[in-house]
Amino acid sequence: MEADMASPPDIHELENIPKLHVIVEADAGLPFDIRLEAVREAALSYGARGGLAWRTFHIKRDLEAHGVYMDKVFDFRQLLIPAPSGLLIEPPIISETINSMIISGSGQEAAVADRVYNINRNARIVSTSRSWRNYLEREWGNVMPPPDILRPNNEEERARWIEWIHEGWEKGVNQANEIFEQDLNQLTAHYQGMVRYRMLLAQGMVSPPYALQVDRGVTGGGDKMLVGDRAVEITGKPELIPGTESWQPASR
Image (cartoon, rainbow, N blue to C red):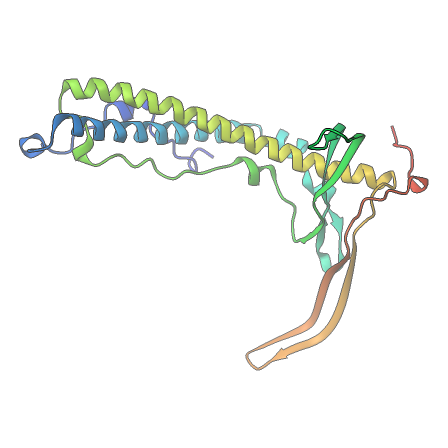
């Protein structure tokens, strides 16, 4: 695993970025404040990109260390529905809102419900199950350093460079944590939404998907021919069933 995951530079490498060559007459004709602002922007960007890549790398490494556990917790395979020709149907993602309240703009009417279900994404044909890795594993590429002209020239600039690197680094780390939290929330919502579909299906509150296979035999010709050609289509998408007479009590 480590061989596949090259560690991005840490904050000390960004702080101590070397000067590749001496700039002739230190940016001749460039006002000091303009140069310093350009160096500041370069350091902030470099630090933010470095912090984002560094934190993302360590999040990914921690996830891989718990990969077996994550595979069990978010096992999408067990939720798939068999379809003709060895294909699979991914169940709908259904959200649930408890104690919903909607008040009209005029404030003269209100609608209140104990629970509100929504099919946010309906069933679809897939060849394999999705994985938690599709949600949580991210790559940001190499952290490219700024050009030599925007690197610190002297001790004064070096001190400010380190300060700006720290500022950008902190923002990058925070951004990585926020992105991971958003991705984890989406993973959890999608998985729970599919589990909720299975529960509602067992209670008769939602219909199952229906798939039709059409055997087309031999098709094509010329440069391409298909033998045993078959078409698989979802002909009946799951729908929520309001008729309470068909509902079944939830199994415990």
